[in-house]
Length: 206
Ligand SMILES: Nc1nc2c(ncn2[C@@H]2O[C@H](COP(=O)(O)OP(=O)(O)O)[C@@H](O)[C@H]2O)c(=O)[nH]1
Ligand SMILES: Nc1ncnc2c1ncn2[C@@H]1O[C@H](COP(=O)(O)OP(=O)(O)O)[C@@H](O)[C@H]1O
Image (cartoon, rainbow, N blue to C red; front, side, top):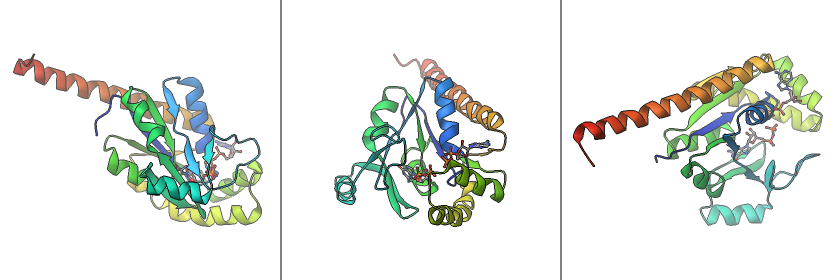
């Protein structure tokens, strides 16, 4: 599908810093909008329904799957997460750049549906740092942290399927890399449209 807006997908093992990076990107780039996912996991501390996620019951999630309401969905850390069509299609059709913070299974589904989507994988600098970020965030129980670390190895093995990999060691450096990818994609997009316009011009199509 060809849309006037760009789709960016950011994936990472839990705790690598993807939410912090995407939030910082949106603070400096008002053209980038978040896609708000649905999930069956419970809200954490400050999270608000409709802001970080739409929190759904298992039944509500089932109903959306049955109604073909998701462009992608997956089981992650024992819960279900999905991107609704409404979260992205209308906005990219209107020319907005939409960023999806989703896992690698969802990212690969998005690439199938939207060939021009740009897939970015965020890596932590080390295992020790990943663990300590999860512990410092203080949002998950130790059992949940252990499960997320175990899943991280499997997730990181998928990084090679992405268009770009960013190592989030120094935050500002990683943010610069993310901004550069977004900027480069916009320039590429303009070049592609111009190339098409030139082709039409040379064919003298009204
Ligand atoms: N496939 C898919 N994954 C999602 C979606 N929303 C969130 N996720 C992923 O689910 C995982 C867990 O997210 P979350 O519970 O917020 O934990 P966090 O990543 O540690 O902040 C992360 O890898 C997210 O990228 C979605 O709509 N689809
Ligand atoms: N470059 C960094 N250096 C140190 N701490 C970081 C860095 N990036 C993120 N963090 C911290 O690590 C924790 C996990 O980040 P978060 O954005 O919630 O990760 P994710 O969304 O990938 O699970 C948060 O407490 C965040 O403030």
